[in-house]
Amino acid sequence: MIAQDERLREALRARGQRVTPQRLMIAATVRDLDRHATAEQIFTDVAGRMPGVSLPTVYATLELLEEIGLVRRVATQGGTAVYDPRTDQHHHLVCRRCGAIVDVDGAVDHAELLTAARGAGFAPDEAQVVIRGLCASCRAEAVAV
Ligand SMILES: [Zn+2]
Ligand SMILES: [Zn+2]
Image (cartoon, rainbow, N blue to C red; front, top):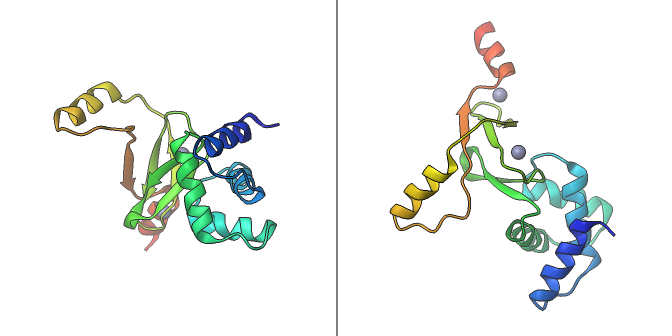
């Protein structure tokens, strides 16, 4: 039994929801994809492995996985969210031209940011930094043109 599946089972039971093969498959797919993926991309993959899973089930399960800390949601260009199986603290580079999303590690004073957020009357869940710009290959193309 994978520990992450056990956490999902417990969370579902705590909410009075059933532990279904579909929900476990969605969690396994997020792990197996092992990259930043939109709900639609995850849905496509899940549907290929287990026909009959609906997009609303994928959305609801991703929301639950985020709530229990098994995925992180990253807001990207244009407001589309991607789901990230890497749950330790890290940040993202988002290319404004091709939409590429890349992990980046670096020290950020989260305590100060969260304190400022609370000062504004906000109850923060987490802080993550998104750095926008041009990725290496889009930069190379921009120079070539
Ligand atoms: Zn790019
Ligand atoms: Zn990431």
